[in-house]
Image (cartoon, rainbow, N blue to C red; front, side):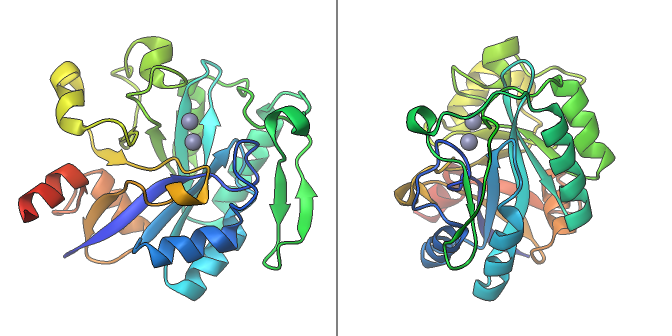
Length: 254
Ligand SMILES: [Zn+2]
Ligand SMILES: [Zn+2]
């Protein structure tokens, strides 16, 4: 088994808050340059840039985990990832169906554009993508798992837009595949205050909105090879696969 470096939370220019330089092309180029083996494409409430990112990733040898950062009815952000194009498309339809008809104000919030490989704008999303969809966290979790996806509450250490900030905790009966920490937290400190999560799989990601943030933090997947099935096993700590944070790997090397 070997360690694969992963930053599973990245926004493209399609997210209103994503910088205009965050084209799939540029993101993948920088991911490669900075030594990532895997990157997650997780725009707010949309998966529309995943297909192009995956294609470019295949050319460059960086595995792209396709999904979205969903805003639940409770205003909590949760990462969702899918294996196949069909599953991703069905989730995209679900998001469009449940995203409220609130228009984006590009001057105020930023542009929501989809680009092609030559950086031509091919689509502009009219609905404001950061809005909460009209589905609860449980409903979204069930939808993700009905499509054999992975469901990971995002930046759970943050005082805003996280499940703990909105509900006070991660519900015990919520079927999460893992939980995510932001760049500011350490698992060690977080668990001192949140012992109830000690058996969960933690990932840590950059939540990059700007090019300089890509791979500013990451985690390691210990697996045989990079595939969705192996990633799922790592999240579930099966057959010796697991996820390790930088604090668990890089300290030992010193
Ligand atoms: Zn978020
Ligand atoms: Zn995010």
